[in-house]
Image 1 (cartoon, rainbow, N blue to C red):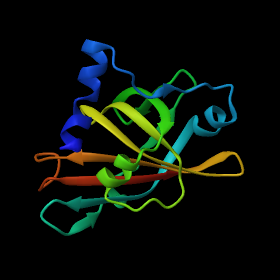
Image 2 (cartoon, helix red, strand yellow):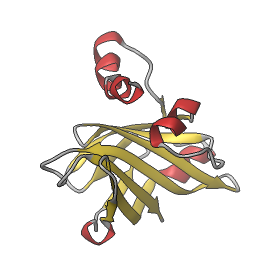
Image 3 (tube, rainbow, N blue to C red):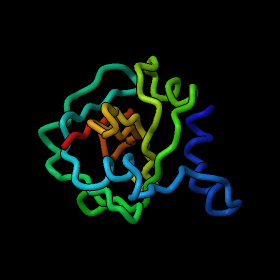
Image 4 (cartoon, rainbow, N blue to C red):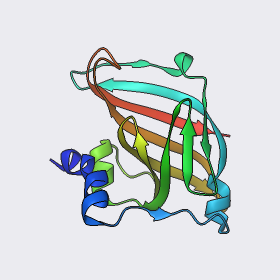
Length: 151
């Protein structure tokens, strides 16, 4: 049920002014650490019916996160923000908490939104994850795509 509610977040924000993720402040250490170009280190799909596959060889575009709070990836673009990870995020991602405390939220990703943990050390972001739903005809079967980005 939570995944359905999460999909409504952009609608809620647009029509009712519900709070979204905090905008990125490029003057902060974290804002400086997250902006710029990111390349795909790994890309996997996990099918709802079980199984999965590697998508790493098919994705060659870089993710650009600008200091204005916008993102671009290939021909897609939108806005992004940072917020704290909630327990429900870990449940939705179907992963046990392993340390990250913040997440990135990308609005306009795949005609919806995507989010994922920020892996940080020594005050900088080392890796970021973009996790989102994909449905046919984009993929052969419905599932969740996990993209890991690094510098």
